[in-house]
Length: 286
Image (tube, one colour):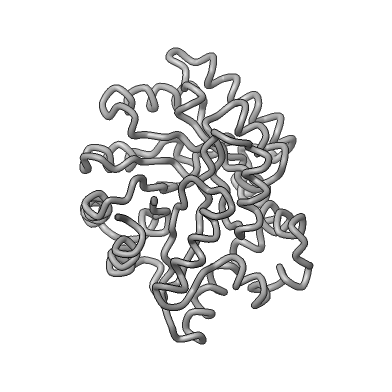
């Protein structure tokens, strides 16, 4: 059981507060912390700082953008992490989204699959290289999922319902890591919970890779419009009391996930939800 903590690391909290949170996740028994650490920064310093501050917790980049991080620089950083903290860092790389990449003006978002293949080739050719078993791909569609099985340790899908996890497992086959991110809202008041979930969904549904992936799964244009339909919300974001949220997470394990990266959503996206992660640990970590 792992944690997806991108929102917290990008908040205005002090770095020491972030490291304290990581230490608590380590103590609670979570296996890995997935975090973006900052878009467009290659492999940001926060990954090494979390590794230094903890003793057992794995750290994964979710994700490093292949448009904004030079493969040689990434490979050198991964090699350093491996030397200092053997087996604890997992490199997650992805193609990001056209509106984000194009807005930065340094690149044009074209042929993302081909660009990923070239990027993996460059990681292989780096000195030292990034071994395939120390990297995963942010994968949604069938081709990228298949590439995750042959050129990486597996896949890290984001913003996906359990039916996507089932399809991803079928494409990956037995063996490759499947670690979907799953956002949850530990809130029993329906109005409050739906408000938190819809605010989170609204931004991601504006990104074509996510909305197109949901359309491939059979959801409709009405489902992905605005902040998303209630039907889509129920499929994407387990909400409610602890038992109901745990049941939603377990759907992904039943569908074939090896590891679920839980992202707890709250009314304050800049506050680290320590109490919620403690509660989830009590039910999910033996």
